[in-house]
Image 1: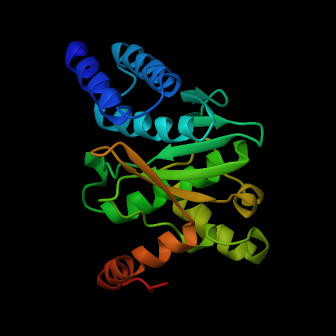
Image 2: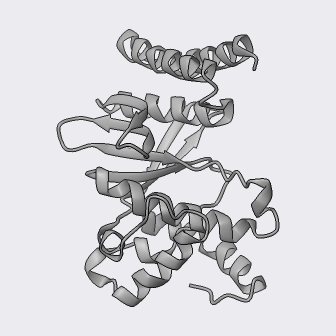
Length: 224
């Protein structure tokens, strides 16, 4: 563990991202960096994930949110970024696309299961729930979560539950939880520039559809 390297990289990123920001924004972003450095000392975070959290936090701070990172929601769940502004909590879960060795032979299925699990488990704690990722990674978001919950069926929810239970079955997700789960936004987080762009899930899905449909076709799955 190289604390000095992590600290130097994160503070360099904070300074670069905030170079035109007000002193108030800059101070809050560096406070987020301090939190992440302390978590790194406990071996609880990694630099690639922390960099995305920091840039995401800066974007929310600039919109007037009071931001926390690695915020505990219950005995099991800790969310990546939480913003509060008086209109209900906003939760952003960061998705880097990391695939563990045990899923190396089915990375697409694993990633889809993880995304479904995050939406299912975290969105109930948020007035607004978002997934955050890099512009270079394509999120394979199940269509079940895009659009109004009233249009879903219990049969569709049961299929999503099977998907999430493949790799993430604790805490257990109920059908009722799935029927209410909702993805409100996708945040594209560009660490290089320090910028964040919020996109409607339906718009994001349209942009990603061509690549995802090709991937599903070669896997023998039905395109959406």
